[in-house]
Image (cartoon, rainbow, N blue to C red; front, side, top):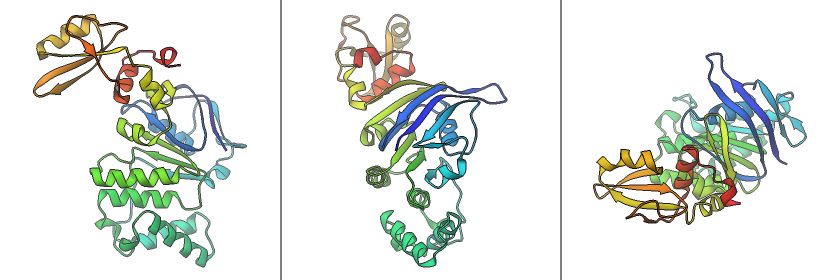
Length: 296
């Protein structure tokens, strides 16, 4: 089963063009949607989650028209939004049971079995009788995944799932998402580059409502090899360099500024070749560089 998005566009009443002719095909596994806040990622995720309609375009999940048969899609959909609320005084096991009933699990024994399996899978079994208001941020995110997995979805959408998590919880969450993606389509929307490089076999970079690059992360990085140069400079030099060179990024290293630029050869004295990372691809594409032909 594939998710096929064709020519999707959305303009809000305030004039913001959130999506611009988005076309994308996603198969089973983990797919990363990378972009800054305001790039249009959440608008796309909400559209795919059947929570809003686009102005133009079409979306199919297998044989199902997602925009016309939302009820059928919701049976196959799990969604963890960027922000979601919980009843702080309700126990985790009780809320999952309630959500299971809403999802259509009418058989009590089957629902109990499903809830217990999800609590084990998300490492929340020992906290099942705790009120959700006592959960840490990472525990709440894992609970969010548990509720999204009720009904054995074929499409799982997670929007900025690791924002605000400490390193240990991020690792746990990564392991959980990786396990889930072995059998379903997982769309991971994030502005955290390492989430995509760690988890995703394919990705897209989104900026100003457009898909600027769709590729495997490793191939995207390879497309910068031999074209990325760096040099340590004084902070006062950065503005002048940005006027004459294709600046990719600046970073403080030991109190001094290291600049990275895109060029086919050493752009100026003192620049040396740099080993590219996915973050460099991200910044280069956001600054308008077209890497697709070079990376092919």
